[in-house]
Length: 343
Image (cartoon, rainbow, N blue to C red; front, side, top):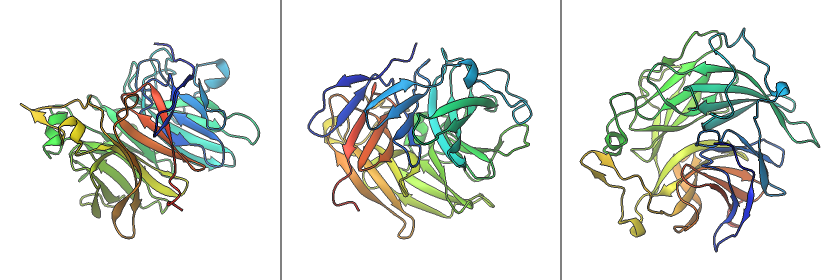
């Protein structure tokens, strides 16, 4: 499926929209610019470069010759460049590596289960560009969900459900996933002990380079780990009445987003019937939260009621005074104002 350009579509009483985005499951801001990067959880949806000023986007990685410069020394086990026609993207992680330079990691399901690696250049006054550098194959049978990285190049990837487990399992609180780690020079990912949670979903590292945060979807919580010893988590912070999905630092805030947990329009809580979880096709309210690491709580930044044109909120990025919202279900990006009460 070819990635479509952005389309104008009508706003509703709560949200503005940028349509044609093909399930933008994750979304991150390029710091200090007007640009965002959005994923596409559909075969061929790939990556989108989003202009928050003009409110449009364009397909970004098309495998043009200038976009493909593999580093075989660092990524010797990557067989070939990713195929844009298959590129099916999920979690994103962006890390600054120099002035106007970033390393972008992308969870890919298109044709292979890998973490695709790009270098992003964001010089002042011009649109950012990117170059594919290689990939990190996931272990056999493991499907990545979200990705994060430390400044030393270490990559962390969550697996929502390991082989033999289901969404229904983690909705019932059973441990189904894990966090896998790759460090420069490693030949493969290794599983970090103690990181098996009910539905390992979003993941983010701390600027202190010592801790990382994992969303346990089945618990509706953020679990904090010390990277030096992951055998036991440092803390668990529960979310107030919503199901966090992706988690990212954005504009100096540790933000996370997800659907309302107890939604009257959908009969209340998500149900598990004979071990099978409700696919949540019923439209639930949307919530953006912010993690307060000092008080160990998640505060509500913005929220809204079920929207006819938008469901499956899974990610948020802050651009100026606007919240840009991604979805694992909808074919659009939503935009909400940051409430005036939020400094």
